[in-house]
Length: 139
Image (cartoon, rainbow, N blue to C red; front, side, top):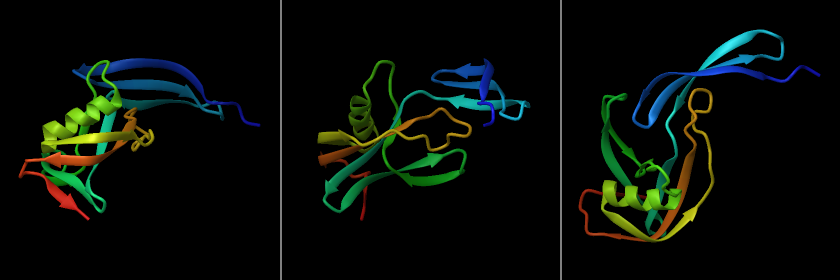
């Protein structure tokens, strides 16, 4: 049986606000050592806001990496000490002008787990209402 991965060192190389870039050193099972970059961003939420049984809220935002507008679920980072459900309600209100009566935590997953510690927490929202005209529907 090969030796396990062994953590050797970790150092923050850059930090700004909730973001930090870290380098983690590891000894691999074959004995080689390798440094991996890690982007640490804190708790994030994605809001699956149902406005009808077959329609969810999407928001359109400019994303600088894509250099284009992007249709996406409302979501973002939790504030310090903020529960994921509270963050989901806040993000839904800030980005789309909606409020949900019922929020359900679905799971936790790492969408980019090779380079990022961002663990996304999708939250299902039901009985979602608004007066905002900037949100869109998705079937």
